[in-house]
Length: 271
Image (cartoon, rainbow, N blue to C red; front, top):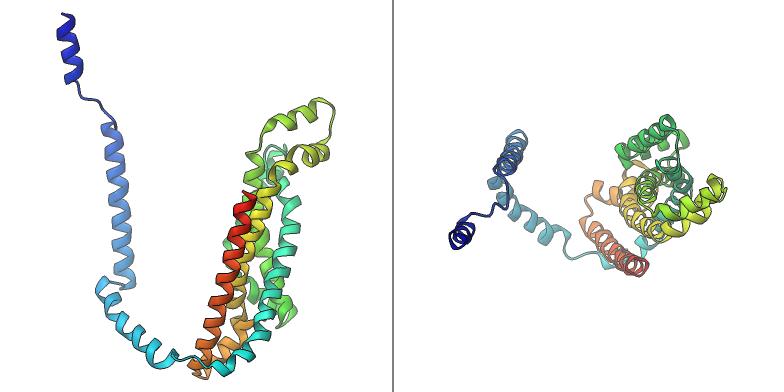
């Protein structure tokens, strides 16, 4: 009897995934495929059209962009420095302003449910508006120039860092916070001694990540008059000076790659 039971147990099939879950995964997969097919149909971006476009891109790069105008590099340096300054100031202002607001968007710090939801909704609005739309609005408000780009990137940075940092605050170890509250500490003391020491590495990492994004975004902002190297890039494109465009792209590639490399190394040390 015991031997028969052991044999039945060996013959029993071990179910690693329930049948209902398999049908759920299958349904999600089919839905995603249908969405891709619908998007390809509505945008007329069929694989054959994409493949046919590769030779055109190759000929444009070989015949128009290459070789770059090496003499134009000296004209790119000042606008490139301007782009870096816009990204640096925008990231700095946004990171400083995002710190206090992120505490208001953390449920374990802000106990007022209504105020908490209002701040979270505010972050959602900031992250919904593209940076180029922000730049257009600030260009209309303060005029063409670097200030518009700095303001646009400041708002963008508040949305990015505030959202990430508020979620980090909600995930901190509650032990130090409860100990400070139990000993009679107020909310500011809880933040100062119980939360900030735990989130400082993540805060620095998020700030470096935002700087990477803002350096790339500041190039695009120049197309709408928000300062930086994007202005001369738009000018050269409009005059069909593709050799100069290639020089600008080459400088941007080297600069952004260097910034990404340094930022990644710093973030690895912080983590």
